[in-house]
Image (cartoon, rainbow, N blue to C red; front, side, top):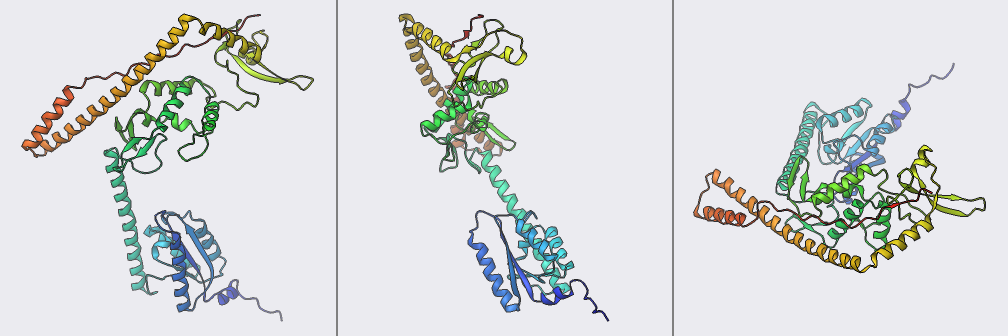
Amino acid sequence: MPKQKKPPGRKAQGESAKRGVIYARYSSHAQKDASIEQQVEECLKFAKDEGITIVETYADRAVSGKTDRRPNFQKMMKDAEKGGFRYVVAWKSNRMGRNMLQAMINEERLNELGIRVLYTEEDFDDTAAGRFALRSMMNVNQFYSENMAEDIRRGLRDNAENCKVTNGTLPFGYKRTPELKYALDEPKDAIVREIFSRVACGEAFADIAADLNSRCITTSRGKPWGKNSFHALVTNERYTGTYIYGDIRVPGGIPRIVSDELFYKVQEVLKTKKNPQGRHRVNGDYTLTGKLFCGKCKSPMVGMSGTSHTSEKHYYYACQKKRTEKACDKKNVQRDAIEEAVARAIKNYALQDDIIQWIADSTVEYFRKKEEESHISILEDELAEAKRAAKNIMTAIEQGIITPTTKSRLLELEKRQAHQPSTIRTPRQESGWRCIVTCSPL
């Protein structure tokens, strides 16, 4: 007579009657890594007192209990289906999920597999009253989590309304004051202005990165610059002095680093330039890119390279229209020859007495305007501060707080505003002369 087979899982159930696993989790960087080890230690003691043999420990570090996207938690749930244990020991009920419904669903899934969840810090009997107490505790955990999140959001929004630093990494060029205000981080703010100016002039990101790295200037994270380090920087409107947090925008809320004119000039360059990042060229730069044009069809001449039958590298400028549309018969121009000719022409032009005088006068004028801009920036800040203070006093008066002090202070602020110009204009910087070279039609 053949031996009768046992029902599936019967043997596993018998062998795992007192086998259990530990699940531990911590959800915030504010908690120490040691909290995981402490939870496991408490669970091991509890399991020993209950006569449960721990066969596995599952731990998720810095993962919120509000989501089931926890790799080790998911692994535990999959292993539970294999019937290798009958208990899950956790520190508290909020380890299974701070959301009450989610925690209940997770525990019910385990119950359906014949697995009981035990908590070392919360002793609930496996009775109707015990289960009710457990559900109540889960509800309390959910309330605590949601209330804490509301407090954090409220605090961040209060800080934002006062133009204070909220959280996260500050943009390159700014630093945090003890009062949580934005302040210029010298000399990094000058590097930001330099980057904006160079991008506005059409310089490739790759070239800017190479130059900054050669000067041992690092990013805000202390790392070398790459061609992908600039897009977020040059599109960050905060550099115009606008405080931004969510839907809160306060023009003049933080110190300005670049002018509106320069910022929007850069945005136009990013839209019109096909490849602002540029590409690394092992053979050096094509310095006339963007300045050299075909003498026949007026299309840009672009840098190219090729290898001859003798394996020798050749570098030249080619007509873009000829290269892409085959619609021009302009011959390629050797890079070194045309660049040397242009450099010689610039030298001869720049060494004339009247040009030298013009360069000197332009340099003096440039620094004079820069000095004026710094004074205007100070006046703008003072005017903005006076307006904010006056607004606060008016709010107090509207709420019925009227004293001789508030009146005198308001008169003082109005007097300060009257001494400031109603419209402060930033002088336009004169752009340097450009060299546009038209290549011979020959």
